[in-house]
Amino acid sequence: MKLTQEILDYIEAHRQEAYDLLLELARIPAPSNHERKRAEFVKAWLDAQGAEGVYIDEALNVIYPVGCTDSNDLMVFAAHSDVVFPDTDMLPLRVENGRIYCPGVGDDTACVAALLTAAKYIARNRLSPKGCGVLLVVNSGEEGLGNLKGSRKLMEDFGSRIREFITFDGRNGYGVHKAVGSRRYRVEIDTEGGHSYSAFGNRNAIAYLASMIDTLYSMKVPEKGKTTYNVGTISGGTSVNTIAQHAEMLYEFRSDERESLDIMERHFRAAVEFYRAKGIAVTVTQVGDRPCSGDVDEEKLRALMARASDASVRHYGREIAFGPGSTDCNIPLSMGIPAICVGCYDGGGAHTREEYVEIEGLLPGLKAAFGLILYHF
View 1: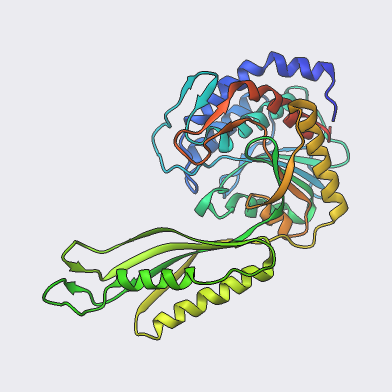
View 2: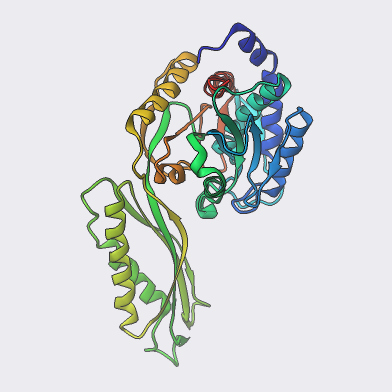
């Protein structure tokens, strides 16, 4: 959507307010599955702007419904509240050399601030969407072991009515239109252990875990699509002079093709059974399950991608390079709902404590977000 001069003037007049909102929001801790502080801040802020009907659901999604009835079709615009960092105290933030540095400031707090600024414009001007209802959502659980709980809850409550789904997530210039599915497991191995000298010869849980990891890493990935695997953490043992009784790891595999994901599942299960056959106690707990894309209307999906890329060209001067990814879009895409993920900031260092956003890139991000959202008003 080409923004009118009136809307552009509004964005310019409120850019400092959006900047201040980002600084305040970025410092609020929001580890996955513990987003309540940030959710309560967002709801209170929306209430103060005159947004009506805002509520926090059971998954800690903050939802602002606009023009929604009990049965009309819906368009969803979302940005996730959680960050990958475990901090429960205020996050450290500094501004220097034209950048805002803070863990999670880009992924995804800058996008949340842009979404909220557009929500304020809609609320203050009492805008009504055309032909459908709109849900403006600051959702939970996108990162890591959040397991897309916020997106799942949205689909559970509204899925059959959702026409399109756009999530603002990540840097501008990159987009997701195809879901990379993943399965994540905690694998625990237990043995008798003992003293490293007097019980030498007893089985060591760490040794068996290492052997299992080697087995999993020996697999040739399926050729269809792109498939990956990773052991992300390992832990266990008691001391240097103790034969480890317990060791565990977090293991995941991913693919943009459901068939390849199933092949990886079979290999993983076979490896587990191989070690159980040795008399080793192996406990497997699934901690994450993200689906691949389902049967999505390609024409509608391409139209959605074109609209987003047009907004990027108009305000950033660059097209969006779309590809597969693991985002909040996984759930709607798995249900056949056209969904894309696009970013509305410039920056770097995502998922590190030196993450930053470029202050200069915030204004075009606001304009791009406004253009996509107001297309339906």
